[in-house]
Length: 158
Image 1: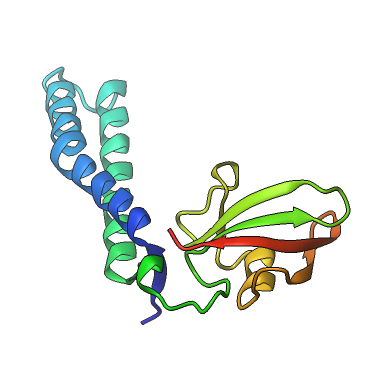
Image 2: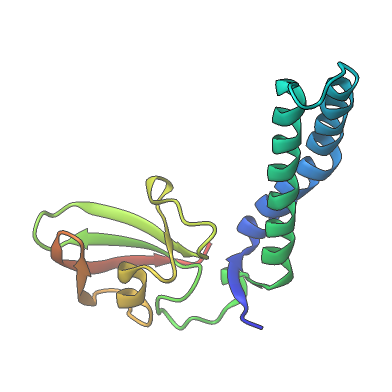
């Protein structure tokens, strides 16, 4: 079975969503289904069909989260001995060699990636190019807009 790398923060976020969906949202949806069912004819009852659809979506998401957590390989970057190299979980300060733009990214699992929050997937072109590099290294990264030259300015294991 393939392991799904994930930060401790990402796993906690999924566990919280799972708790919410099981203990808060599921009872609300079940109550809505029961209330809609009490309104009579189920064939033409839009409330009932909407509640059943919401129930199916919620149950599907619960199954998905449970699957992700069951294959999670939780990696705590603060416990790794990275020897000054970019590894999973590292937060990096980068500089674009062409524009001088300063960037800050953390390498996270596929499910945690959020480019707007500075969290890039371990499978992204930028992360793959930077894994194993150290401070001062310059890498050429193939991105959709072309090749981007990035310099590793600083590494943080937080």
